[in-house]
Length: 256
Image 1: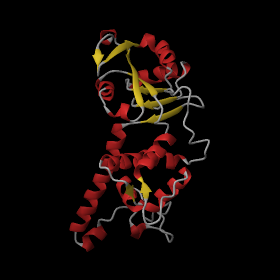
Image 2 (image 1 turned 90 degrees about the vertical axis):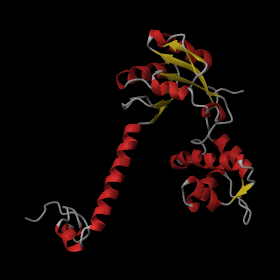
Image 3 (image 1 turned 180 degrees about the horizontal axis):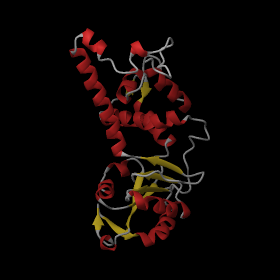
Image 4 (image 1 turned 45 degrees about the vertical axis):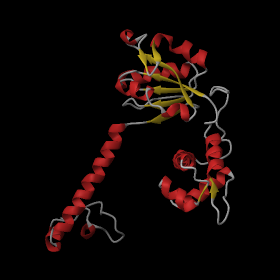
């Protein structure tokens, strides 16, 4: 079986837009669920709804793959699963190292979805000598001093960083120097990497803050509906409709 170090996905060379690439895993997840229920075909409308996109966007995305479906029948579920998996590089074996085996790192190590999606956790690495030799998810934790040799031996091209923020850049630098070209970063910091290295940032606190914003806005809208209209107009905040310029923009200088 081929390893990730020797075979890279062909999406960029084929000109598939990054926005489309970002949606392919959503389609694959929906298609996999259909496959598990032995559904043979699916319409663009049904698949788009399951993936959370509109059907026109889905059809445009699939056109980049050369898949157009059959009028009146839809898309062949099994073929699309294979086609998208191949495009994402999931028909290969991608060895991954996880650096930082705290609560989050251990949780990722125990996640059962990696193997079924083409990823193999090749090693768990931590700087704490007390963790060395311990078993997490059936894998022995190795000391960070072995990082470079582990990457070389296993042909690793994908690294996952779950360390504290202060240690993340140093770990990133070592991963890149050892040959890792893709990094999934859970550390609460922005990493600096050279050209040719891809970084995906996962920050749970930012996602929660965005949800908090939406919750606050929904609460404000609900309150506005409860307030009588004349009172709501008097209490309208700066930037509401009555303070806007002729084009709907907020004036640079508010009237006295």
